[in-house]
Structure formats: C-alpha cells, structure tokens
Amino acid sequence: MFGEVDMSIAKVVQGLVTGPVPVRFSAFDGSEAGPSDAAVGIEVRSERALSYLATGRHELGLARAYVSGDLEVHGDMYAALTAVNGLQMDQSWSGRYRALRDLGGLKLLNPPPRPPMEARLRGRRHSKERDQAAISHHYDVSNRFYEWLLGPSMAYTCAVFPDAAATLEQAQFAKHDLVARKLDLQPGMRLLDVGCGWGGMVMHAAREYGVKALGVTLSRRQAEWAAKAIADAGLSDLAEVRHMDYRDVPVNHYDAISSIGLTEHIGRAQLPGYFRFLLQRLRYGGRLLNHCITRPDNRDPGRYRRTFINQYVFPDGELEGIGHLIGVMNESGFEIRHEENFREHYALTLTQWSANLERHWAESVEEIGHSRARVWRLYLAGCRLGFERDQVQLHQVLGVRLDGHGASGMPLRPSWP
Image (cartoon, rainbow, N blue to C red; front, side):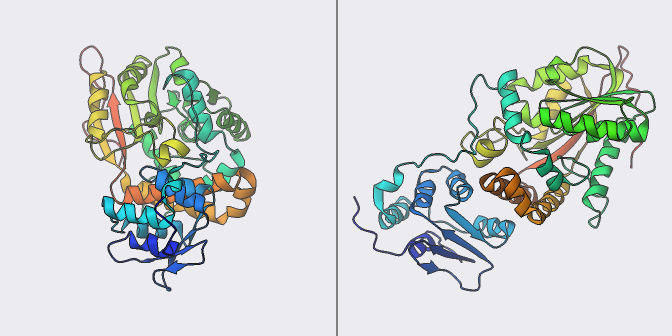
C-alpha cells in the first residue's frame, strides 16, 4: 500500500524537521542529508529501525532502534540528544502520512520484536516479589561494571559537589557527610539506611562517625559486594548490609534513618505507608533524611509505562513532585525541618558517570553485552539533559519525629553548612 519508496530515506527523515537541522542523517540505502560538517550524525541501519520509530510511542521507538543496533549515533551521545531535543518536528497528520508513505507504507506498522533488554515484570506492582524483580533488573547486572561506572565510592546516587572542580570521589564523600551532619550522627548512635546500595552511607557513618549502621537492599549482588568491602575495611563491628526488603526490618527504634535513592521505587500509593513504617522505627527526636529524584511539579503522571526509562532502566519507578512528598512525610508524622534541591549536582554526577562509561566502553561491552551498554549510554546522557533542563530534580528533605510534648531536639539553627 502507498506504492514504492520514491524518496531517499535520509531526505524523508530530514523532511520531518521543520526548523534548522544541526544533524547529519544517513541510511542503509546509501542516502545522506543534512550539513556535512555536523558534529552529530544519525544513521538508520535497517528497515527494522524505521519500524521501531513508526511504532514506538514517545521516545521508546528511538530507544529500541538504538539499543538493538538498528540505529547508530555518530558523535557524543549527550550532544546528539541535545541536538535532537532542539529539533522542531512536523507533527501534522499530513506530514506523518507522507513520511510513512515514502518510507515504505503500512508494513512499517508491523511492530518488530522488543529487544531482550526490556523489562518484563509479572505480578502485582510493588508486591515484594515484583519489587525484587524490578531491582534485580537494574542492579544485579555486574559489580565489576558498576566499579568501572561509579568509581571507588560505589555510590549510585547524586553526589554533592563542593565546587565545579571537585572530583566525583570528593563529591560523593561530601554527599555522605552532608547526610551524616543533617542526621547529627554521633558515636554510638544507630543508623538504618534503607535501599543502601553497595553500603557507601553505612561505611561512611561507621568509619567517620563511629555509628553502628545497618543497611538493607533488595539487590543480592550489592549486599555481597558490601559485605566484602565492610570486612576489608575492618568495619564489621559497626557496619552491616543485609539482602532484605525494607518492609521486613523489625521494629527497633533507631537514632536516625537515611533513605537515599529508594523513594523513586516505592510508588505513589505506597508512600504514606512507607513513611509511617520509617517513623515507627525511629526514636523520638530521631531524624529521617530522604534523598530522591522528583518531578518539577505534580501536573503529569508520576509514571509513564511505555517509556525508555520504565521499560529499560527503572521498571515500576515513579517520581513525585517535591510538594507531594513533603506533604506525605508531614501527614505521616514527620515535622519537616529542612529541604534543598541538588538538581545541578545530579547533572554533574551524570557527566562523570558518562565519562567513566566511555573510558571503560570496551570492557563494559564485554562484561554486560553491547545492547545493555548502549542502554546505559543513552540513559546517562538523557538523564543529564533532563536535570539540566529542569525536567527532573533531586531533593533532600529532613524530617524529625517529635516527642509527646512537641520537642524536636533540633538546634535553633542548622548545624551543617
């Protein structure tokens, strides 16, 4: 239907752009379009790439084509996404009809098989079993790969940069130390770190503050790595990481709780229960530091199922606006004492992670496979752009559990810089 292709593929793709085109297009039919000196090139390598683009909603088609290797990006991925993000596309039905006709017709609307890297979860969303599978999809990849990606700190959350010249290790130390100071950690105190990753906060609290710290994670590989790191550091008398669901942590009134990068996995409907659960495990006067990615507002849904991030990176992840999160924390019994946004810091963190990935690209491809490595390249660059453009944010919120007389135990002014 629609007849034969009567235009080169590259010209058709370029024709969908209505404004300036700072990208060079090329395709498997030998065609090229766009400025020859463009810093970024996009190559359509197969007809299957066209089918992915025609059938994928939002950015999912582009991601599927790239992850599968049917579409190639020549040049820096961040620069490519910046350029593509700035293109003005013809969204009219007539323009899309012409493009579909010229590229091959209805046969392109037959969806190709989804790349095997896409998450396929079963069961009730945010049940313990499904949450375990969702976490395993992203975190139980390869500890060796994460060592290349994250560096010695093995901290997979937003760093806090004292200044733009700080190294990633300095910034991750600063993040852990800021959390410790906000929680007012003191020798002999007990800290619970939920969603503890590879144990960075647990080890920092034990090593720098003499705190007895327990971390819990749903990733078995994280727990195994952390146990060895704790033993190697001589911190086994103070620090421990367990492979367990936070919902299985028994009632035991901790002096402080840190939740660094876990709230994004909880789900909107479960947030009230999550914060009440943490409140019940905190002594009176104890503090909770919640550190998580958020949306800039609450106008859009917190979860789009058919997106690259949800299908490939964080299945079942949900982001909320900071106002909603603070409201739920407050309604759950916490008095909110401090809040700040580290959006620009996360953009810097992602820049460093991307540089680490490119530095170890060949080893990463060998360790985790070409398709999964391409997922990471696309994910890190896209998230960097999102934080820079205020499409996502990163907030730390400090809450305290008041005693029966309303006493918080907080100083009159913050004790951290």
